[in-house]
Each structure stands twice: as C-alpha cells, then as structure tokens.
Length: 169
Image 1 (cartoon, rainbow, N blue to C red):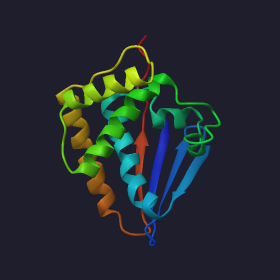
Image 2 (image 1 turned 180 degrees about the horizontal axis):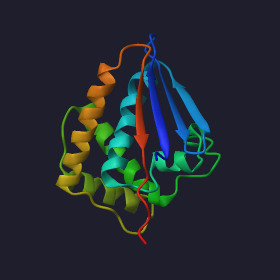
Image 3 (image 1 turned 90 degrees about the vertical axis):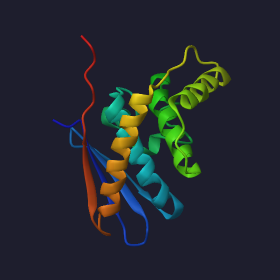
Image 4 (image 1 turned 120 degrees about the vertical axis):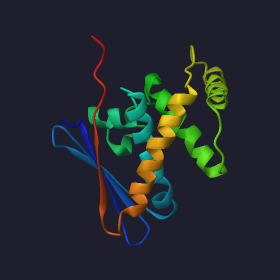
C-alpha cells in the first residue's frame, strides 16, 4: 500500500497543481503559478526520483506522508526547520536542480565536495556522500519521470505512488 498518492496536474495556463493524499485519506495541495508552474513539477519529480532510489525515510515526501502540509515547507516554517536527516535528499535535489539549470552533469565527487562544504558552513556534524552509481540511477529515474510529465496532456494529471522504506529491525 502506498504511503502517499502524488498527483501533478498540468493546467492550461502553464500552472501546475501538486496534491498529496496520505494513507489516512488526508490531502495537502498547492497550486504552482507562473515560473513556479514550470520549475516545481520538475523539482517535485526530482524529489521523487531521489527519495525512491535512495530509499530516504525522512525526505520531502516522507515528511508529507507523516503529516507535514505543503505549506509547512518554507517561511515561516510552521513546523520549524527541516529535520537534519532530511538534508540528504534536499542537498541531492538542490544539486540536480542546479545541474539542470546549468545544462551540465556533474560527478558524484562534485556533489560530495558541495555537501561537505554545506555541512561545514552550517555547523553540522558529519557529512554524506553519494556514489556515481546512485547518481546515475537517480538521473535515469528522473529522466523517466520528466518524460512522463512531458507526455501529460494539458488538463490531465500524472499520478505516482510513494512507498517509504521501512526502518531496519
């Protein structure tokens, strides 16, 4: 059973609507207008690719499945800042968004250096590293998702099922 049903609707005016239905039937949603309507569907699909491939238990979609609303992500951060263990997926997604904007593919070593710098700059203990294989699998999944989104006709919806990885026993 899915922890979250993710729906991205492509609107005729170039906007998009993201809605997430939790296993308990509750829903959170957000309209993405203008530039956001072009950026956020790809950003949200990148989150899906990263969290699915890496099996992140505390990424964006896992937090939504746990009860965070889409309006909880950003100023004024009603639930407080993101949990530190959510940083892994946020860093990878941000890295891939920058990569997409630049039109280049960087290596895992480039990401790992960037992540290490982030941890130091923010006074966080440790760091996290990604392998070239993981990065390749994420990019492959993301390409599939981007192609699916591009094929969605205006007015229609892309639906994805998100299942959180179970905690180790």
